[in-house]
Length: 386
Image (cartoon, rainbow, N blue to C red; front, side, top):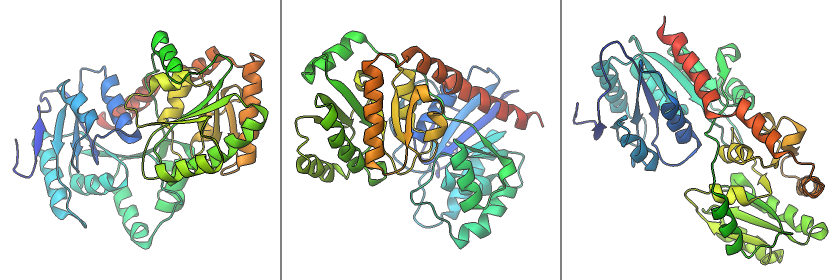
């Protein structure tokens, strides 16, 4: 352990001629940002790149446990309430002690601390914005500090063009400096027998059309609109079912809507599922009704299994579902349009006009983890050859 300020250090970044990259994030619990970091590290096949992670908050989370088992270096810090000046000093100490070449900061707050810690050092700084709050906003404090942070930052990336534009509109960052790198994942692999067993556990017949989503029960995911749209779908497709994977603060509210719409026989709430890949494989059509999205990981997972999707026209959704054969993009918070698109996708399924292999092919070309890593690898190379 290099300092009493660092709670945990696992391993040590290698020395020698290797180029050393540290990712800075809140923690490594299960989420989209954390999955991107994990995927970048797992895809790294360059023996000259050594990667580690600084988490500015606790607990580290399950993704950290997985990466620690592979020997990845972790630094666990404890950010104090308010602006924590000591945290800047701690990050700077880690940078200097390990001669870090690139500090890759994920999300806004880690960027603030990381950019200030690396100021006037040889360390290059990348800031990646992974998504935006809804409704989006700014404040005078950011208008003043972000131009300073921008000068301390070598590269800025965003996970969609919508996210890039938000950085320009709300964070006062120069559009020409921001590069879009879409999220990428490893395509899901499932066991057909396990998926069939899951179907049996729900007592579903072959003529049931299975709609589904995977999302935390949060107001931003707009489950109420999805349920209201589904009640309209049932008028034309009474054998349709909706499986909702997830949990959270909105569960009681969601259950009350199911009861009010008399959907108890057609809607299944599974609760939180750590690895929901078999559920996604069970779905005939994947739904995403969010008020706001960056680049949804579960949407990419559904595409990797060849599932047609119906999504709202927010954030990165239309940039992912950018071809008609992938599904439908509908107006935000419009239950009638959402229902019509679901019915259209059901009709396409029934007429066997959905090409699963084509959906997978588009996923492989644009959103496979290897494509994302290739883009970040080029970014790293552009910086450390300077």
